[in-house]
Length: 286
Image (cartoon, rainbow, N blue to C red; front, top):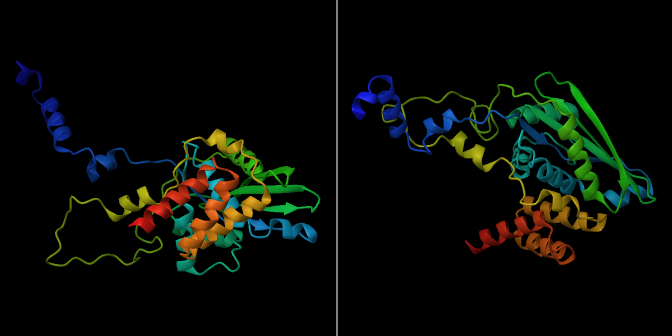
């Protein structure tokens, strides 16, 4: 009776479903993520005079926390900051951490992104600051959704949260065909076609390197994004957090751990710092 009910196409479909392990490349391909990929580059300190010193040294922190906040948007995928840093070092296209529009377009395509976010911040030296941001369509090179946030310089995180919300609500980021992280032509990958050898099998059931890279190089949302937005992070602590990230980029993990602990001593519930500290502590233990 059961066999007759599952005859023909139904039996074939059932057999195919049973034959595909849940985590197999074929099963993964069936559920391929088509959300657009967004890369956030380091923001520029455009302050002048006495106000410049207030915001010197926070660019990495602003970039990281904007990525962290935007990662909570389920409609897009954010390239992880560590991956961006790796590509910047490999390509050697950026001087003094400044990314202009043409360089953002080049690097964004290398990273497999369809959209980039760039911007800057200005302090007037009197306790007020301005944070600006814009998106770039990496296919058309069109700049869109210019945003401007004005606020107190001792509430940088609140300004980042406002900018993230505005970008998320105003961006019209349609999914576009394009290379994914790790596809041929991406940084760290050979752009030459692979040559087959007699000893190389034509097919493989192992997960592709690109699939692995996709998992590893997209930013993960934090557990409590609303709680993070309510944290009033002052400029001095932002500098501390930003410097800790810079030490991570230099592989000075011991120094980075010390700085992240200092941030958490001031803001014990600051999840981005705790997550970085946990990762570094785990790496040191191994």
